[in-house]
Length: 196
View 1 (cartoon, rainbow, N blue to C red):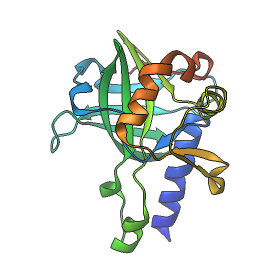
View 2 (spheres, rainbow, N blue to C red):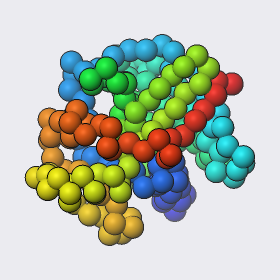
View 3 (cartoon, rainbow, N blue to C red):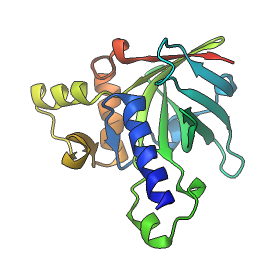
């Protein structure tokens, strides 16, 4: 039961963290897109007046996997860890995050077999002690798919408020970012952080 509550909190935090983010079953990057940037390392605190919704992030190198970061998000005393990779497309930096199920406690193999490690992506800007995350927005991607009539593989997850889940291969979701980056990310939905 405690694991169910922790997993439910993880889902709620991811949804709160993003507003209405778009998820993908596959990463948004190819191996040759991946970069390292030590300026992301450290503790970050969200710049917001709302103390209830405030997020804290701790980013550190992930020792077991090269080029991965351990991306830990805390909100209201609930902490969850994600795998994160930085990558670059068209001279813009992005971060791809997916949940770490190895940090869940009291999980049995049946539950773990049912969890989908979906990926989300954000444009990331690091300017000294300021970090901005601008997540791929569900409404923007929906507009592009409908208006541009893109042939993309996706599913609508009704149980999560009609959230879009991209199901195409990495090459397809990567191409989406390359071709429509300016239209996919809304500056008004960006989350701003400062180094602690």
